Image (cartoon, rainbow, N blue to C red; front, side, top):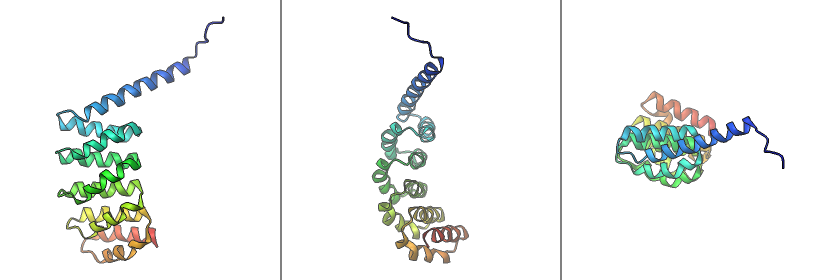
Length: 174
C-alpha cells in the first residue's frame, strides 16, 4: 500500500484552521474576564474575525455592567451581521446610556432587518444628536419608505450633522 503523499499546502491550511479554532476559543473565554479591557478587546477581535461562533457569546455580553463593553459588543454584532443578534439588540435602544442607544441603532442598521425600524424610529427625537444621527442612518439603510415623513422632519433639526444624516437617509428612501 503506497504511503500517503505529503502535501505541505494542505498541512499549512490545516494548521491555520487549528490555530483559528484555538484563537476563537481564547477570545470567547476572554469575554468573561474580570478585566473590562480584556472583554472589550475580545469583543472587537471577534467582530473583526467575522466567525459566526462569536455571535452567541457576544449576545451574552450585551448585559455587561460596563457601558464601553456593551458599546463595543454592539459594534461587533453589527459587523458580524448575524440575524440572531437582532432581538437581543432591540431592547438596548431604550438604554439610559446614549452610547448604548447609538450603538444599538447602528448595529440594527448594519443587520438590515426592517422589523427593527419602528423601534429605531423612536430615537429620531432623542435628546442626543449622535443618537438621532445613528437612527437616521439606520433607517436609511433599512430602506423602508414608510419612515420618509419622520426623516424629513429631521431636515429642520437644530444640529447640522443630524440634518445631513436625515438628508442622506431621505435620498436612499426616495
